[in-house]
Structures are given as C-alpha cells and as structure tokens.
Length: 350
Image (cartoon, rainbow, N blue to C red; front, side, top):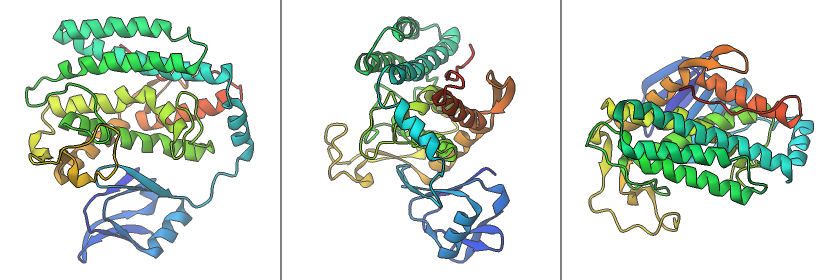
C-alpha cells in the first residue's frame, strides 16, 4: 500500500506502535504498518492526533490534506529540502529566456501528442467525423509547437489544442447516461467535469510529491507563469500526464459503468452560480454536482489502480508503473536543469 486514503468523515488517525490506525467512534476501520505507507491523504473532516503527526514526520511519510471534494489544502513538511544548489540552478535557469520557452515547448508537445494518441485509439473503433477532425487539428498544432519564440504564443497553441481535444471528448463515451459539452472548472458543472477536476487534483498531488522529494521548488515553472500560491512547476509536469492518468480513467469508469449517475449527488435546486472562475462566496454545498462517498471511493480506487499499471519507459528501457514514471520524469527535469541530459516528455504509444 503506497498511498493510504482516509475519506470516512469524522474518522481519526492515531499511532499505535509502528502502525497507523484509523478509527471512528471507537471502531477500528484500518490498521496499517508504517513501512507499507509512503503517503497519507486525508480528505475532509478527518482528525489526527499529535502523536500520529510526530510519527508521520519522523518516518518521513508524506501527509496531504484535501477537502472532501478533492481541493488541495496543504501537507505536513518535516524539513524543506537542503539542496539549495539545485534550487539556485532552477531559479537561474527558469528566470526567463530561450531555456524557459524551450522547456515549455516540451510540456506542450507532450500534452498535445498524448491527447492525439488517446483520440486516435478511440477513433479506430468509433470512426466518428468529430474525432477525425480533432486528430487532424492536434497534428497541425503539434507541428507548430517549435515555432514560437515567446510563451504567450505557445500558450495560445496549447489552448487551441485543449479546445480541439475537449470538443471531441464527449464523443468518446459509449453510454448516453453521461453528456460532456465543454470543460468547466471552479466549480465543475456536470458529472464528467467533476471526475476530471477531482482526478487532476489527485494527479497534482502525485506530481508534487515527486517534486518535493527531488528538492525542486514546485512554485517556479516555465509554461505556467509564477503567481502567488500557484504550484507552476507541478502544473507544468502534469500536462503530459493528464490524458494518460486521468482522462483515460474517466472514460474507463464511465464506459464500463464502474461509476454511474447513482455515484453523484445532483442538486436540482442548486443556486445560480456566478461565471466560471468567479468563486467569491461559493461553497461546496452550492456546487451543482458532487461525488457521493461511494463514488469518491470508486474513483480513488481506479486512479490508484492506474498508477500501479506498468508500461515501457524508454528512458530506462524498463517496464515501470505509472507512479514510478511520474517520479522518473521529475528526475529527468532535474538532469535537464543541470544540463546533464535533455528533458523529453513521456509519450503514449499508439
């Protein structure tokens, strides 16, 4: 068990010897030896004892706090990375100039290429005009990735690629139970978007764990500009993995009916929401759609199952799990910053 999720609301995490114990109202829900846990994720109203906190810090178990809806709140940090030399290199290299644009191009190429492969896989079976159109649009945009000399133009290409991809995404579902018209965030306004948003939060946590272990600063990236509270480097490294680790799982759980409409709470009388992104005064209780407790468990299970799947990783010429590949990509970035090798995005194979 690399990652232990606690989502039972009102539960308490305690320490008992060298074990982490989860209880609720005195009833033991789970007891896990610490050596089996690399990361503890607490979602929502979960209590944790001071003894357990000390134990987690001593054992170096990454502990992450999320809201019940999957929004990242923070994590326990024992000591910040002592590798100041690496961070100085990062700050110098990512301060601007051609190096930053070149690195950002690699993230965009990885994302758009994996978008295209995912659509092509479904197009082989579906043979839909909308998918074919999106595949060709993505091919043309990928060919343009190397052209820009500034980030704004590159971000425009990335945005156009995402728009083409999500315009076709709704045609990948094999059931009429779910409809997808466009990508909506903050908050997601339909079940598919709810799964995508929750999945991207879990993916961000997976990536940031590798960044923290590497000693890099997650708040300075290339494609995503620095902004207060924005983990820009995490967002950069996520890009190539969005279709690989989240979108693919969304399609699987819905097309196989692992998750159905019964796993969502739809508020028929939800208040009228402000325009997307204008989040002032909006609370989770105002969201038009929420995953149920059972739906959350199913989604986490399928996401973690995907992380444990193995595939060929060209850099090491080995079969690795997707979780290991995420960690390896962070290490590749470290070597790229040190100019020991050139970063290459992880690409799906057709």
